[in-house]
Amino acid sequence: MAINERFEQLVLETDLNSPAPENEPARQAWFLARARMITQKRIKEEGRPLTFRVETFGCQMNARDSEKIIGILESAGFTEAESEDADFLIYNTCTVRDNADQRVFGRLGRAGHLKKNRPGMKIAVCGCMVQEKSNVEKIRKSYRFVDLVFGTHNLYRFAEYLCSCLESDGMVVEIWDRADRIVEALPVARKYPFKSGTNITFGCNNFCSYCIVPYVRGRERSRTPVEILSECERLVSDGVVEIMLLGQNVNSYGKDLDTPCTFAELLTEVCKIEGLQRIRFMTPHPKDLSDEVIEVVRSNEKIARHIHLPLQSGSDRILARMNRHYSKEQYIALAQKIRDRIPDVSITTDIIVGFPGENDRDIDDTIDVVRRVGFDNAFTFIYSKRAGTPAAKMPDQVPDEEKNRMFDRVLKAVQETAHGRAERLTGRTMEALAEEVNVKDSSYITARLSNNMLVHVPGDPSMIGKMLQVRLDECRGFYFFGTVV
Ligand code: 5AD
Ligand code: SF4
Image (tube, rainbow, N blue to C red):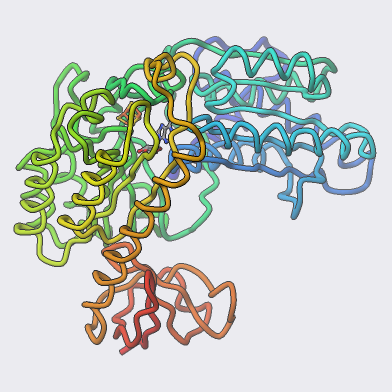
């Protein structure tokens, strides 16, 4: 039975005349049944559907969490709205960089105005940003119209919070410092019917000195292989052909389990699932990407030819201060090993520019790595000071102008190498998963190659979700135009 059906059965069996059960997921089913009753009443009274809007910021983890939030909201009787002018508006936030926080506060201010014209509107904020006390204080003080604030560790209780928020006025705030458990079997509304993410670990133990994630997502916790595999099997029986295994550092998967299981072993098992056509994973840490994992990728055609391997910096001095546990040459050797063993693999990366103490010689080293590895794509970020992290206390913070200048240097190098890498595939025929109607021209379909690059082909919506053989006719920098053969 699909997750949603199992949970639905629990909801239908719920007896609202008895108190809410203590055990999960029965407790959430009880609150969902209650929320459903409240929304049905309002829908009847007002003679119109009740709408919701989920605005997601940040990474794949958040995108997955939003699917869980939408699963609950739809199950409670809400209909998705086209804009933020909705009856239930929720911001699922990111706090990795400061500009993400600022964007949320800007949007929240505007949402407050919408609320004035929409009686009964509820506004919620969840995700990484509110794991930081200072942000919660700011919301309490300056955004008093917010109805619900909850963190990353207690997302599984969303049905419960939704219910109290629908039943009472005043701000509900519940943030936990750590996760007490991983609750399975809650409904999920997938954004794409044919592809899905699956969490394999939550949290991170690495404490890179610039990064807030270990503080807001907590210590690393792995789901058991049985839970992951049965979720993947259910997804496949529900029409999913591509799954992305998600974790902050997938290499350390399973170390915390009672019966340890390595990431390579897990990947091997996932590959055996019949009907699953493509597997991706995000993100491995270069310090411990094992030979076994490389071998599993090489020998399983189902695993995408794409490794996202965050470099962060090419300077040994900066890498040490970032607490990354590898050197420039070790990184290059690893990338070379991956390229040697996995033909046609694309390697992409994340780079931070303007870390405390960084100067042009460090940037020379980063650019040297960019050129020597020849990244297929790279996300370059300007260092953002996150309160509470060790790097925030380093005395030699780099002025903004310097950061911007160094950023431009790195970006130029990245663009040059990435274009060259894509070009070499022109004329080849490759497998691509049709994902959506092209946003600019609806006579085209946008499909994703195994190496994560996009190709636009003439086609129609009936192709979506299918694996196509596509000839790459023309390279346009980071993407292609092609034809189905
Ligand atoms: N400033 C800038 N970029 C950061 N990242 C993480 N923390 C920061 C920060 N404080 C980047 C890293 C990471 C990506 C998800 O975000 O490159 O890999
Ligand atoms: Fe942050 Fe480093 Fe953990 Fe990635 S590995 S989430 S950069 S602390």
